[in-house]
Every structure is written in C-alpha cells, then in structure tokens.
Amino acid sequence: MIGPFRGGSRGERGTMAWTRFGKKKDMPGGLWIKCEACGNMIFRKDFPGSKVCPECGHHFPLGAEARLRMTLDEGSFEEFWADMRTIDRLGFVDRAPYKEKIEKTIKKAGRNEAIVTGIGAIAGMPLAIGVMDFQFLGGSMGVVVGEKVARLVELARERSLPLVIFCASGGARMHEGALSLMQMAKSCATLKRFQDGGGFYVSVLTNPTTGGVTASFATVADVILAEPGALIGFAGPRVIKTTLKQDLPKGFQKAEFLLEKGQIDRIVPRDRMRPELARLIAYATGRDPLPLKEITGDPGGEVQAG
Ligand SMILES: [Zn+2]
Image (cartoon, rainbow, N blue to C red; front, top):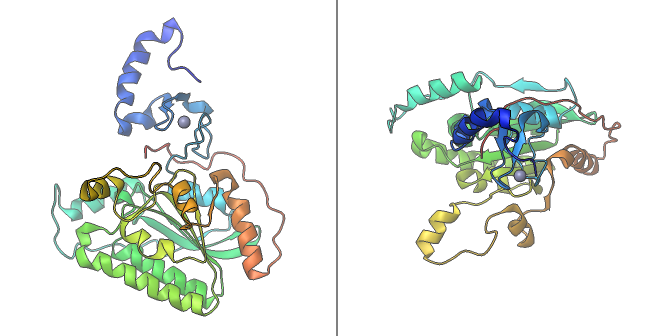
C-alpha cells in the first residue's frame, strides 16, 4: 500500500489535501489520487496513463480522446461530425436552463457532444469507431449522440468497415425528452441494416453503461466486451432494490455478474483491449493484421472520479 502523506514535513499540507479528497471533483488538482475502489492513495506521478489503479486494478473513467489514443494506431483517427450540436427544443429547465448547461459543458469538454465518432485503424485494419464520454453530461444520449451513432453505422455499412463503439452512459438525456428515446429505435434500426448486410459490430461496455444506451445500441452487438467491474444495467441497483424491496445478489449488474449470466461475451482489461479488438476484427473480416505496435506514453486526460 502506498500510504498517504508520510513524513513530517508534509504534515499540514497533507491534512489539507486529505480534506480536499473528500470531494471527488477536487481530486484532479491534488498530488494524490484516492482509489475509490480500494481506498489507497496513489501518488499522481505513479498513476498509469491507462487510469487503472496499480493497487487493485480498478478502472477509472477514461475520456474519449485518451481512449482513442489508447486504442487506435497512432495518427490514424479521422473525426466525423464533430461540429454537430444539439438544440434546446423543449426549452428545458431543471436546476439551470439546459441551454446554459450544454454551453458550459461544451466549453469545459472542448467538444460538442458525449460521443466522438470517426474512422481509424487498429493494427493497420480500418474500422469505424465511436467513443462515449461519461464526463459529458453523464454520457447521456440526446439527439446528437443518437444521430452520430446512426451516421457512424451507416458509414461503416457504406464502406464495409467493422464497427466498434465504446459505451459509457447514464442513459437517455432527459433534457431532450422523447426525442432522446427515439434515438434508441433509430440506432437499432441502422444496426439491423448493417448486420443484415454482414457488418461486424463490437460493443465495449465501460463503467457505467446504463439506461437507454444499454437498452439499444450497446447490447445488440455481435460481440459484447466489458471492462472489469463496469456497472451495466437498465435501471440502477438502488432503484431496483427500492422497487422490489429485497436485497440484490452480490455483484449485481457488474460486468463479472453479467458474464456469468451470459449477457456479455468477455471481460477485457483496458491494457488488453487493443490486441483483443485487433484479434476480433482480423477474425471477422479475414484481414491480416500488421504487427501491433505498442502505444507508449500517457494518452492524456485527467483522472476522473467514477
Ligand atoms: Zn485501487
């Protein structure tokens, strides 16, 4: 275990930092990162770029850009539809007007939506790829996320490319009402056409994948992979527990539980995901993969709380 704030000279500063760690949102600024799974404090400089806890293997959320860098051959990614932005069609207001909230989120994220889509390559094999980002309004699926997924599937179909989507979502975006829910049907309809035409689709479920995303494009793939420990479900465990008024089985809705029940195909640790995808794509498409170059260095992005 790496103990927090050892040594007298650090004393008071350490205590202050410890207090700040109580708030998840304050973590990125600190010298130490507290693992939310094992509770260990890890010196920021020792924290790996993969954002996987070196003590217990807990997978921290990973931003879309870092995920793309960890997955694809260097320099192979070409983004599509980055300019697409949502409209506040309902004039929705909860604690703040949706319009303001989305503006703020876009500014903070430096990107317009909760999914990045485009084409890239793994081991020299081209693919269509979408990566969701939970840090953008909880990875919620509004009109733009649904439209980008549908367009990505169509692109994969037109160009006969395999399709990989990394999912991370709290579900449909309530601020866009029924228009969000329609994205479930739209994405599934395009996927049906893609798969009927022989298209190959791999879905990767990361923590958390829930709600309307689980109930649509996340779970209709040819191969469903998941990261270790990922929460995967429709309604969350708390809602189910309260509704059923009974205790849930141990590990309920975790990737390991779902694997045991046959709902997913395989659990793949983050640092093994790139070779696993290369293997699957080569197998499904009959292409010869180039030797897989190891991606070195930090893919970037802050360590985010789950
Ligand atoms: Zn840990």
